[in-house]
Length: 231
Image (cartoon, rainbow, N blue to C red):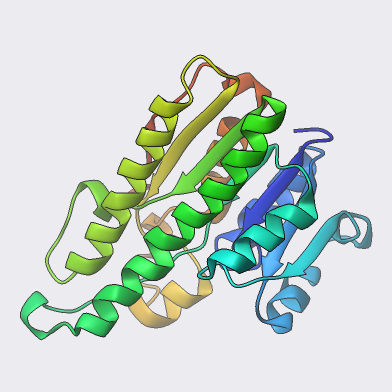
């Protein structure tokens, strides 16, 4: 990815703390949208000053179409989209609120659609692109109390595969990664750390993402790649 313009959404989050250093190590020029300045400072704490200086931080609301359009316009060109943004909640279907249902789709599917839509427009203009989205094992193996999350993440898989089909015979690819439980501080806090040694590490997911985002993955399109760890 040396010299490529990479839009990395969620680059300051739990998964992003593993993915962002890996993307920078590939020589990319990285743009990270953010909403909370404290998240930027957290990322700064794990990067060298030289690497941190290679990131352009742009405030943006990825749930708002006008904001995403403005973000892509400011970038001028998107070679690679790595979309990590998402959210997670549990609840039995008969007890689950419609508000929370819509929120799961907003965070997981709608942000993916908007980021892909405007990044894809840029990629089609200059004839090159790599799109990597993040779904979940739950998107292909739904489980009880995960109806909203599973449905939204299944939508991410379908959307990505549809884009891959639309971009056949171009130098644009679209693929999706399916992690199981990710070993992040938030998940350890909410789920306990007893089984954390079996969860998949952000750094492992990062290696898969970086390959899919590279020029070397030109023949990989429309795939949904499991990264399950030992769960």
